[in-house]
Image (cartoon, rainbow, N blue to C red; front, side, top):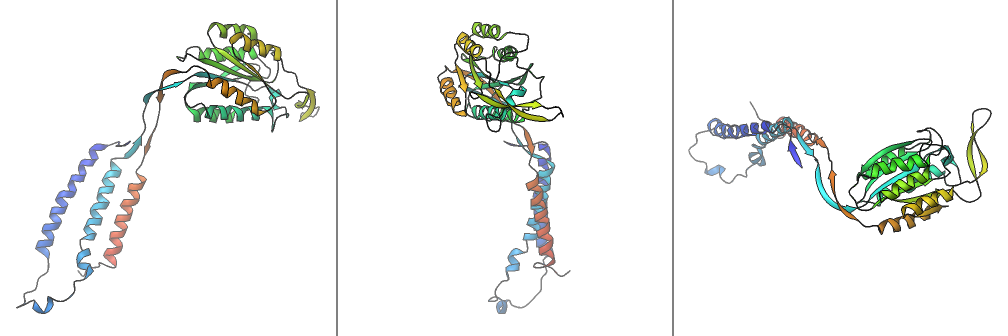
Length: 329
């Protein structure tokens, strides 16, 4: 929607009216004349196109003045808060960003693969209220519940290993996700927990967190990330450099399965990205509920076009006055 920051300046456009009247009267009173006995010899002479363009200079100047007045009024495109009703579910993504997520059994590594999957998931959930929690040795709410897909995608792309203390606190990550989602208005609430290891630190035990989710009616879908067998894990050598060594892939599938079973969710073992299709299918089956969504848009000044028009009109007037429509004083 176009609006003006200083609409009162638009009243100055009324000045153009008396200027036009003055110009018309001036043309009538100042036109050169010559008394002759008859104009019959000149009646058949063709009229020059300059006769029709002689008022163009004044019109260009008035147009330039009008553009300047509009610039002073500061035209803006303003987006504002609006509320709409949509159907969707409340979802929180809980993403493990511990150092083991740099293992290279996924391309380029587990963390980047998980980020790509999460971004794709977010882009496909247009009507859902989604939050993001990251965890390692501690947990952190990266993005509260929102329908802003761009905000979520940008943050997911910016996630890096080392943002949190290293470790795998599955219980703490799950509790943080529960705290984000429990106040949501949707009937269907679900958490998608992505991890590649077993719980080895944190305050809350994973099963305790699962019991809390069950009491609140929150489903937890757990995903164990990692191929079967061995994988190249990052390790610091004696010279302080990162090198990759082959180690067996250890995922506490029992704990992840118990979390899913306790909350009525499902456990997936992600040995590739295709498993996410199953998650999408499952979440699409969830009951949806109407929710009020607030959309925010910003205000942007749009005076550049009017500035170019003003310069163009002034420039064209000067050019014509000095060349094609030049008059003799």
